[in-house]
Image (cartoon, rainbow, N blue to C red; front, side, top):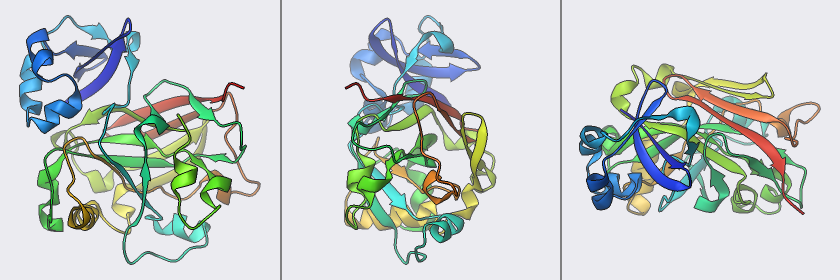
Length: 282
């Protein structure tokens, strides 16, 4: 199954995607489950598939929101691909290096991402996002798959100078509309081999990053085990798993995002997340 969250003529909705068409859920189902997060909270994803009987909409005609527009938690794992660790001059982690993002720091597929007034060190990081589908507390790595509702693409836009003000990443990760999430939630049964899936990031058509999900230093199961030992993961929570090498800060010369650049994060079987850079209004 593949689901999107969207607005159509200003009205929010969500539905099942087939080819280039969105099939909205029917009004009765929407009354019970107002958004995708509530669907996951109610363990109703398969019911949502059956309820996707609304008037079809062309995917190109709706404005896509972040897949989960209102996640309770967005938890990032930094420095989780070996080549990226090396290019940033850091040591391989013994434990997941964690940071958080706030929901208002992200936009959906096709929406502008914003370079802030205070910095021109705006960098790109393409990532796999894991979407939690049921409450998870003290979950063993071997059982983690049972707690995953689906996957999506994520652009972890980073303001590098602010990120480096202290040892904590949070400042550089939470500028308004600096990241993006989408285009859709794809359930695990749609992905033949996640480890073999290729992740690429292109900026204005130029290939910048490339890696495979199987290259993660700390795998998804271990990440969920670690996080669920700290706090309870809830349905609709989002985990960002790390980025491959090739980020702008590590290039010579450095490559910062500028207004008019188009960033595309693609993952096999998950689609392409595409966003254009705009300057913050002054």
